Each structure stands twice: as C-alpha cells, then as structure tokens.
Image: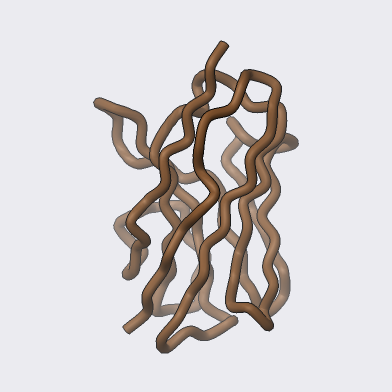
Length: 124
C-alpha cells in the first residue's frame, strides 16, 4: 500500500503562484510514476503532469506547460507542483497519485493510489 498526502493548496490571485507538496509513504518505488491531476466542479478529473522520481523525467498537459513545474526530493519521498502564472481556470481540487507499474500515463484510470486532494482557488 501507498499513502499520499497533499498540502499547499489555498487561494491565489490570477498571475500568482502556489506550490503543492505530496508526501508518499508505504511501499513506494522511485521508478513508478507519480502524477498530478485536478478536478473542477462538474468536470472530469484531468491530467496535469507526471514525474518519474528515479530519473526526474516529467511530462505536462498542454494547458499548464511553461507555467507548472513538477520536482521531487527523493530523500523526503516528496514531489512538488510549482504553479506559476495562475489563471482562474486553474481553480480545482488537485490530487497526487501514483502507479504500481512503470509506464507513464496521463489517464487517471491507470493510477492506483490517490491522495485526499487539496483545493486551489484562483481569483481574478
């Protein structure tokens, strides 16, 4: 089992920044991808980005590319989502997730473990 705990959400103004953290515990493997997803009210959960902690490889959704950055601190079993140039449409609950296999995926259906989510609200 893997436990994921997100933190760092809150309220920001458009153009501002927030940094989310996700601490992983349990049977974690740095070769398995960890993803960030978000879900706005009335919408499906959507891919934001993914990182493979062993190599630092990252991939992002087009909607956040150039604004969001995922990083990791393997000693702390923690991944971060740095969100800059925030837009009102970034408002959502953000979730950290992890897989039990190596392949990189953008589909939430392929992730096995999820955090509780953290609310990000961006005001105009």
